[in-house]
Image (cartoon, rainbow, N blue to C red; front, side, top):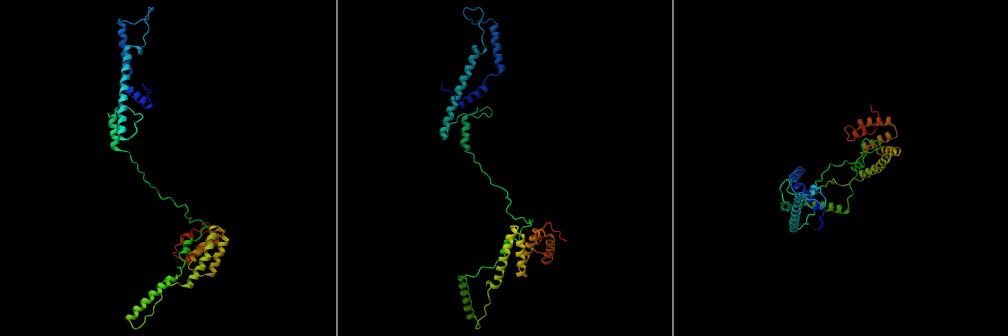
Length: 297
């Protein structure tokens, strides 16, 4: 008989654990055998020795026959189970199982029923739901930091519109000619064409370009904590453009530069002046937090 593998030995051990007699049954059987021997039944002796040879309980005929019958039954059941499992697995296109736990002890389900159930259910499908909270933006600037200047986006909001291209000018000219032609047909007097709203204002654009060109280096100096250079650039901007549309951003940067230089008293006065000069400004909150060390009256 070929040697059993690990799965077969595990199955045989499980079978013996379920169907082997309990210790109480074994002791009762041994007691009955001893009673029969004590009743005068013949006891085999060794030739030449008057005393009977001791008989080990596991070598007694009834015990040997019982164990042998159980072992044969377990072996037959194991072989039948393996054959059935192998045929069902081959029919389903799967590899035969290497070993199986004892089936039917609790549920009464046989090996064939278990395989049929697996074939009916099919492989399990696992779905993973990807859900997560939005990670906080670690790159977001800290509004309370004293070295933070007015964002460049505030300057970009005031950037002038791009200059008209030749193609756009030609298109506008063609539209103007069509409107003039229709007007000539409907009225004897040629109407005066008003300037369109999207025509660029060269002077205003040049001024705004100059302001932004002076404020951007000041913002870079604030981010680099070069407060002296930032304050100098902001003061130059105030002298060059006293009525600037970017006056609020300039004031915020100046307060941060003063606070970075330790001139908290001047920063506090600038914060107070900002509140009077720009009531209801969207930058009021940032101005008030620009210098935590300043004692604003």
